[in-house]
Length: 318
Figure 1: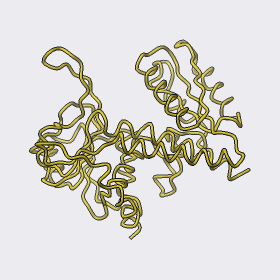
Figure 2: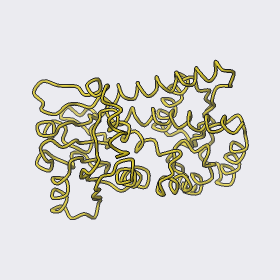
Figure 3: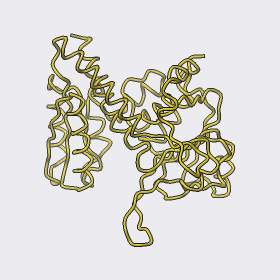
């Protein structure tokens, strides 16, 4: 019964986040609106605690090199943090930094009591082992939720800081009152940062309580539609444009598209698309997330939520 109570609490905002579009059967899930609601709640809670005499939380970004995508991602997260009342700082290191030097920087930030959350922007240069770096971030400051200890906690039913994108998907389901209790979910994609955490959360007692089927790159192409057409919820994170099509979706299913792919349209212009055929699936699904504007805004919102959680945990120990 825990999952039923969890999802029923969000019924008042159900209509606010589901948008009807002309010519579409499916409702469009407004990830921007849900993300804005989460960010507003984070900001309000921070303001209350700061007004009570506590210092503002501090989130530190570490970026290595001059990759344009990484610059953009960190800039966007930094802006969102400031808007939420979170003090932020970005530390930029040259691409030729050694792994030992980067580990030393992380160790210093781990020891800095003024730093409540830390995020090392991925990807890193090839000479640096990402797993080693991710696990060097102290679990209490790991707002990305990638540290092996945080992964172990939620895998064993004791979540603390969840990976932001999976947490965002769960928040979408909650805020739209999509109850997964006893339902069938097909997770297409098994990445360590998205697919694996999601399948764990969705089948967990008291969180999703769903029956979860996992598909991936080695699922035979003829078997994939069989799995997706059985599902009440289809969640896709593969990086393959338009992998999931209308004929692969059960009428009335909810489709969550996490994919972000840049493709050229007929005029040669670059556009963002997901892993699902949005127009086709919109004719049969109950609801679907758009790309952009679906899961993407939730990732940033849940990063801020994780920073708030880490900060409050520290305050409770003082």
